[in-house]
Image (cartoon, rainbow, N blue to C red; front, side, top):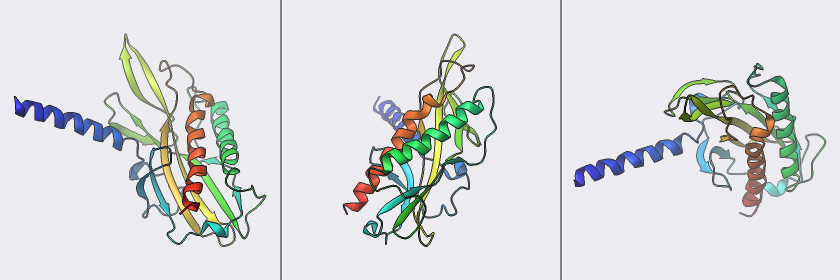
Length: 223
């Protein structure tokens, strides 16, 4: 009896650990947008999300007085589909750029161009994993925005909407990378496999990413 209880407990624990791991971008999901992934370490964002991150240990935020946000992009460039039309892709990219500027201006004034004393933010929507109902990855494709079937009933499956991002932060004068982050998030579920995804379905994900960047700046500056 005790043996059975122990096995059950271990099984539940292993599922919980697997669930946590699925929230972290894995190396085979990296898109190639960043120049170096070797120093990334798992960490928690200010909101508590699991991310892969690296910050230059010699970084001195007092050296910077403005931030320049490069136009966001998709990397690799995705192909529009009937499920994820061009209007959705354009809407996602436009909103991500707006969200970053909206939140980062709370940290530093926005600059018109890179230069001395400017942090350059270079961000992209990147590859994420598509998963089966058992939540085991079966393939990784660029911008696989619609992923796991999260429930099944009468032949109708709810579909999760997911986004991944990679971002690097550079010294505006030298181009030196001073920080990097890789993460992903889950948006609003779609009611079935035929529902067309809209940018609104993942705006909350991008709002969270942008807010975490602002809060990370505050946290680092306070050290």
